[in-house]
Length: 367
Picture 1 (spheres, helix red, strand yellow):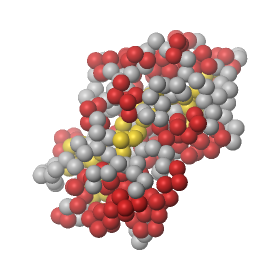
Picture 2: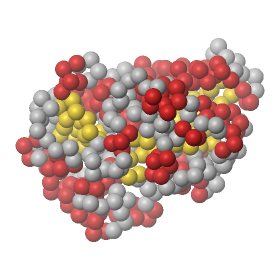
Picture 3: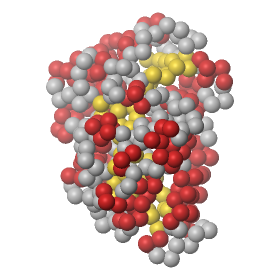
Picture 4: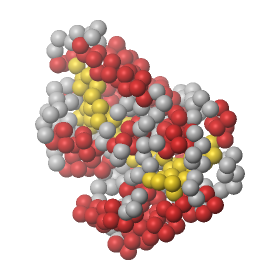
């Protein structure tokens, strides 16, 4: 996130344990106190309340926005879409902007929880990659949401230990790597990988296809895994316990930041077959007291130089903002093009029970 890194936070959503986590959290503890520190806002019109994933916006960007507009940002954090949704639904918010993933944009907009986006207030929407909007089938015309980041989990491989491999999900079927691999402890991610490998959609509601994915995982992948791990896979990879891990690039590279040799020996890829992806978006909550300021923040984020600063801070490609790519100074861990075949995880409704039954009553049994 990447955020403590973002997706590491998303991991703890489903569950990041990274180097420097305490320092990063301290940064945002400080950020959250800005409202009561050096800047004494005298009215709510001078305050913007943001509810975002655990560390997902660099402090430098918050500071620049505050300085330019003479306001104070109060930044609160959540670790999962479910936690965020429950808090908002209970009325304990007062937030202006939140950052839900696509499936929750769909759920919450349907329930009337968002203000409509006033496109006349946003001059930088032209910078958003049309491919991201094409993927955002839940709100392709940005009626209630503006894309913040489009990303996906992939596979990190230590090529000093595994010099030959195919860049697809079949790597987890390799018996010669038994005891040296992990996959995420995340139902939709792992089952989505298996479904894609079999030629199906990550959002299928077909019981036979879900059964086939369950069997692939149980019979070919799971026997080769040390465990399903959404918290310590980066550390395990960094200390050499694991040679192949499914996870988020920023988590892995954060853990190996001080190991130059391992960084050179690490290849991260998103299979060309595709897999599950996510788009986190900026949405204005119904009843926001600072709708104009919220629009200013959204537009600020999509200034090319600001978006490039965000992406560089976390090692991201500038997936949602095309002109920002020209401003990037850091080589990202993967390319925007690598996401082309990925598929967003949709809200499955009642069909989610099919996945729950496969995952909790079969795949995760005995671990």
